[in-house]
Image 1 (cartoon, one colour):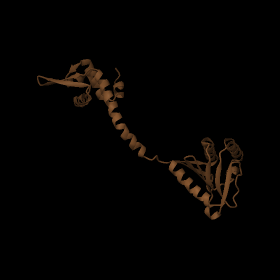
Image 2: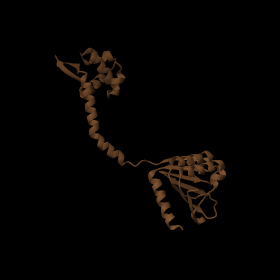
Image 3: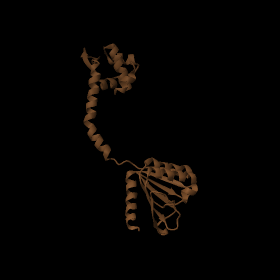
Image 4: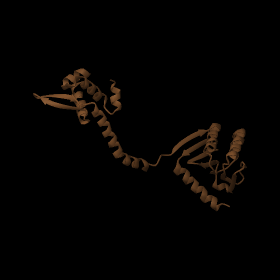
Length: 235
């Protein structure tokens, strides 16, 4: 029998070897089991203690000598049932602790044209309305044909967008898009897009442009709240 099967059931490798050896011997002293498994006697004693604790081995003492005996194989099933019961007992507490953890934000960095494509494709894949700061036509100059395709697909999916742009900055007019302007002193050479549980920050002042994508429900909510506050007060 393969010891790996017993290991999968929760035994250590040494316990599995000792168990199989004793299964063949039926009853034996620790030294006999050590010879059969070619293990050091000290390790055999450790393995036997573990098997006794699991209820898979018992022992008798005759003439001051300890003989170990294998328990009926059905005890393996009982051992697994007990393990499953123990797991079910602690599962509610484990689940409670796990749910108390807030997932850490995932931050990804992309560069250039392919990075921009990644974000635009992600917006289309998300398929939800989005908001943003720093609207500009720079993406069109970087990817003219791809930007046209992106805008067409946005119209097909009816993805609405509300964005702020800097006065004097050229923007990409499109269906389902609404813009509000803000003074230059409140903006910079960057575009922030908030969609789903993600925040994409496009840094145009770096060559090639760098895109920082933050995947975080909390971050997206914070950025979106800031946007909504500004959207209400900017005319």
